[in-house]
Length: 244
Image 1: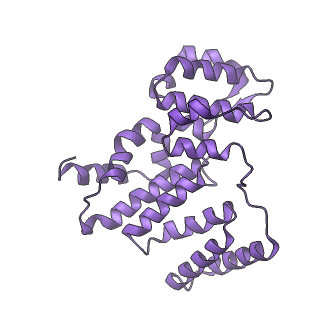
Image 2: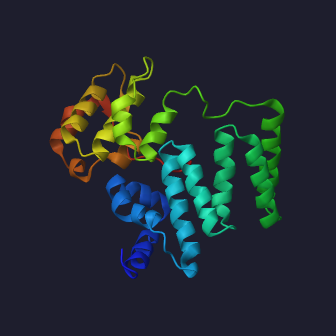
């Protein structure tokens, strides 16, 4: 990128909020957000905005079920703005989700130092202390067979996933949707279509998730043949982001 283009691209990306960015999908992520993340010559006066870009990436990874990728992005945001509170708050929640309670406890203390009047942080600190005391089971666990698939997708390791990932016997739906995402990201359209037809043939109805919408190619949005091929076996609703 030229010396002028990066700033313009940065501004165009930040015209969206984090959820709007997720709705733009993977193709937009590659063409707009990823170049900003990969650019390494940002002037110091742009660092707060670059932190916002990395926070946006963190949110996308969270919605797509990849907490480790989200943590890496939030930490990168803090490397550009050490007081980026949104990233600190998200890191607290993310470390709780993966069972890193001590890290979450240290981060909530950092947040309290920055925002001493935030009463919610005190409640969060107590919740983390309880998780430490009682060794609570986290949302994501090491024996979760699907979590690593989401992390591979977030890291752009689509070929690795397609070459090595094995379908868990009891979770064919989640594996098939991750495989479809990898096919979409690598522009293997026939395989993508076949993958969704496989999903449609499962015994129970399949819900189109935020991950599915993120990787859905624009060319398939208005593709009547695609939607007919998956038929009523797939529940298609726009994702609800209210909890993210």
